[in-house]
Length: 96
Image 1 (cartoon, rainbow, N blue to C red):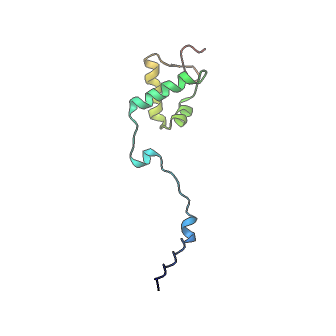
Image 2: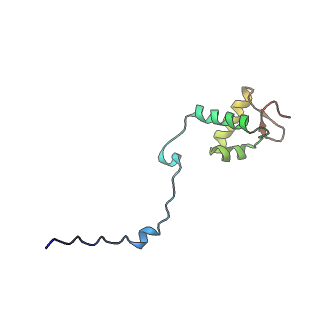
Image 3: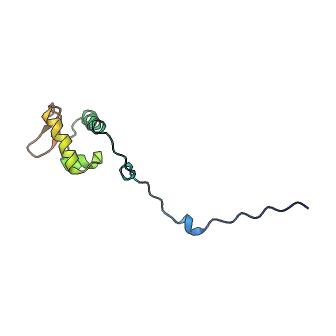
């Protein structure tokens, strides 16, 4: 008489209740090269005509801390790619 296969055990209900959460790449020790971040910032300003964020808004959009974002935006102002308005917003120079 052939041996019967043992019945597979059912997974624990506790494992099914676990909420999985994806970790951001920065949590895994990954850091984007600065040139990639600056290129992305440039592209967003070019693609979204009329885009004029504050440093805080841009930091959230680009997923940067405020200091890094401020440094990148000021660098783009220094090279003439962006201008800063009197109210602290950043925009392309061709926009009023």
